[in-house]
Image (cartoon, rainbow, N blue to C red; front, side):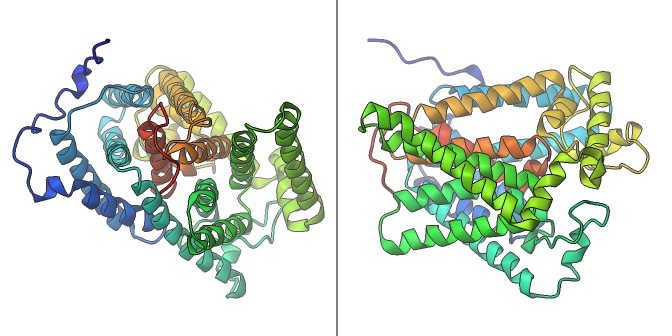
Length: 439
C-alpha cells in the first residue's frame, strides 16, 4: 500500500485550525461561499466595479477561513502551474522598472486566484454548486443579452460611436448592452455559450432546459450582433470543440465506421453553415472580410502597430518583463508606442504575458493552458458529476485562446472570472470520474 504524497511546504499552513471548535460560519461554509460566488457571477455584467471588488474581497476572505480549517490535499498539475505563474509575477514585480504600479497588478492577480481557490474548494466539497453557479451566471447573461438586443430598436445615435468611419465595415451597428463596449460584451458572452450547452444537456426538467436554451439562443444572437471579430472566431472555435467532444462521447458505443465519420460530418456541416452565413449575409461578410485587408482596415492597422511596440518591449526585457497589470503597462508603453497609437494593452494575450513576465511568463501561461486541456480531456470517457462541465471548460479555454490571439478583453473581470470558474471546475474534478453526471 502506497503512502499518500507529502503536502508541499507551500501549502502546509492550510488546516492549522482544523482541530479548533467549529463556529457557525465554518459549519455553513459551503452555503455561504456558494451564495457569494453566485452573487459574483450573476453580477459580472450588472454590478459596478466597486461592487465586484467587494464580492471578490469577500470570496478571498472566505477561502482563507476555509483553507485554515481544511488541510491541503496535494498539488494538482493545474495548481502547480498556477504557483509558477504567481512566482513569476512576484519576481516580475520585484524587478519591474515601476514596482509600485506592478504591485497593483500583482494584488489584482492574487484576488482573482483567491476567487479561483474558493470555487475549486466549493466544487470539490459540493459539486452540486456548479449547477447553481451556472444558473446565476446565465441569469446575468440573459438580462445583458436582452438589454443588448433591445438596443437595436432604440436610438442608434449612441451605437454609432462604435462605427469606425475609417474601417471597411463602417456603418455597422454594434450592440454593447450594460458593458459599454461591444468587444467586451462579445468576450463576456463567449465563455458562457459552452456552459449553456452543457446545462441544456444535463439539467433535468423542461423548465430548466428552456432556461438554458433561452440563454444559449439569446447569448449567441447578442454575440453575433456585437460584430466583434475576435469573439466570432472564439465562438466558432468553442462551439466546434464542444460539438466534437460531445459527439465523440455520445458515439462511443456506435460501430467503428460511424464513430469516425460522425464527428467529421458534424464539423463539415458546421463549416458549411458558417460559409453560407458569411457569404450570404452582407454585414457578416463585410465584417469577416475586414480580417483579410491588413492595414487597410483601421482596427487591423492599430493592432499591428501596438503589436510591433509590444515586441520592442519584450526585446528590451525578455526575462521578467515590466511587471503585471495594466497600470505598469500604461507607464511603460508610451516609451515604445508609435505616434497616435496609444493603447491600454498589447491586444494579444501571448504578447501580454511576455510583456508582463517575460518569456518565462509566456511559457508558464502555455503550460497552464495545456495542463487544463489535459485535465478536461481526461474526463470525456468518465461519468462523474463534473465530466460534462469539464468538456465545456475545455471548449471555453479553446474559444478564449482563439479570441486572445488578437485581443486582451480576457483580462477584464467580466471575462476573466468566468475563465477562473472553468479552471476551478477542471481542478476540482476527480481523476477517477466517480459519481453520476447529474446535478
